[in-house]
Length: 193
Image (cartoon, rainbow, N blue to C red; front, side):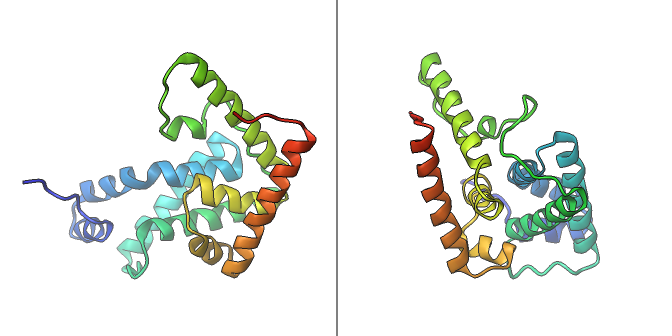
């Protein structure tokens, strides 16, 4: 008989009853998506680590105070906290974020890919680099939707709620991002394999 993993809410309940391992399980379940989304916004591994830790301190504090509302999903709630902290950090630093990644952390190392051979792997790496550079050229609002949709794996409804716009606005931003990406590909005469 296969034992099903505990839900996020069950883990939170166990944590509130004193089971520290339950929170560790919850953290391990979602840390990659949360860290990745933070990193894609701030573009600095140290800063991403700091914000990531702040996010989980806030989560722990909110849960311990009994203020966590489990009507929504835990991951979306945690993503909203991390997004808000990234926006706050962005406002404080007033510097534009880039999607280009450093050697230290690469989103495509986290995304599973079937490596059939070395040549395919090299082509995939080159394509990923080209896509990152193109995304970096998008206007901020369009880049934000692309990151949240494709890297943080959020639905348009979740993106709309997180960015405090209508779902039609979020969809429109994605539509314009795709149109702009196509134009950029044509302008730069890029071949994405």
